[in-house]
Image (cartoon, rainbow, N blue to C red; front, side, top):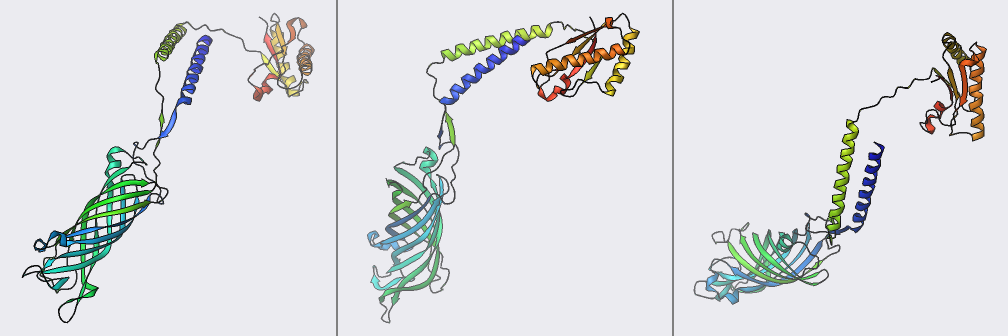
Amino acid sequence: MKKITLLACAFALSSMSLMAQQAQEVQYVEDPTQGVLVNSFKSNWFITAQGGINAYFSHHDAVRDFQDRLAPAVNLYVGKWFTPVFGARIGVEWLWLKGMTDQGLGMIPNSHETADYNKTRMSDIGPAFDLMVNLTNLFCGYKPNRFYNFTLYGGAGGYWTMEHHINSNGDACKGWHNAHDKVLTFRAGFINSFRLADGLDLNLDLRASAIDGVMDGAEYVNENRTFLAAQAYLGLTYNFKPREWHAPVVPVCPPAENCDALRARLAQADARIADLEAQLRDCLNRPVQVKEEKAPLATIYYPINVYRLTREDNNVLEAISYVMKDNANTKYVLTGWADNYTGTDAINIRLRHNRVNGVYNRLVKLGVPESQLTATTNNGNLCDLGEKYVALDRAVTIEEAE
């Protein structure tokens, strides 16, 4: 059984050594493909400024030349990416809308494109909010230095409409005033982002907007106010620090150059395991040999550095003397012990002799024949259970001689 234990320990130590060597070769790196990355609230903020053109598609715009309907548009956004894929932005937009109408907001008198319609010119300004999805990071994985990113977005906003003053002659004057027309807008688009430098992107933003609703002012209530608009913007985005994402850390194990040696070691380990299992089966099937050992007739215990007998010890020895005298043909061995955890060898030798001689002399005094008694000492520990139990090693044992 002891042989099996030693072999098992040797095998375990060998396996642990191999595992330790392999663990030193493992590298831990960030892998953006392992799940969704989420940074703290202060991270991944950006600001975007854009300028471009707006094309207006209201009810009667088909009678006005397309190039004459193009007008400027600008916006300013502040946003945050919550993950490399999902983000949001909020900002302020301004659109200049140019169209045609037979009546309605923004009409410019005496600006006939045809006999029935006049040109219109309005200015819409207001807040807007978008939710964004970076499809490049979604399908290709996050890369901090990627040159191009493609982002889809959708959102809504609200505009206040401004129009030119009309003088007493029916002509449009310079200057804008509130047309008391608030409208809602819903839009969707995509952003093409090109990395110019660390934290700075060039954006091409293409968008389609649906603008609808006269929310106050009943002057033009019968006019069809649902229309579409298309915008194309060119702008710059600055990404504030910290701008990169920290991916989950995963272990990367180097590829094994040649596995033949490992396979051979594994085969050897399997063979050793099979051998140990066979030895274990043989050990379990081996008949158990029980060795009967007689317990001492009595044991007298002593405090540290003490060899004199107490009143209780004398009472015990008196009872033992009766047993010995009743068994006159039985011989007894008295053995003196001292613990080896305390004291010097010289002190312990003296204690063993004094203790066993004290018991021997007491039994003789109580009438036990000297021929029945043999006094000896043992330099070991009686119980040898460790330093915590040394009190059990300070004793004299009384046993029947074999």
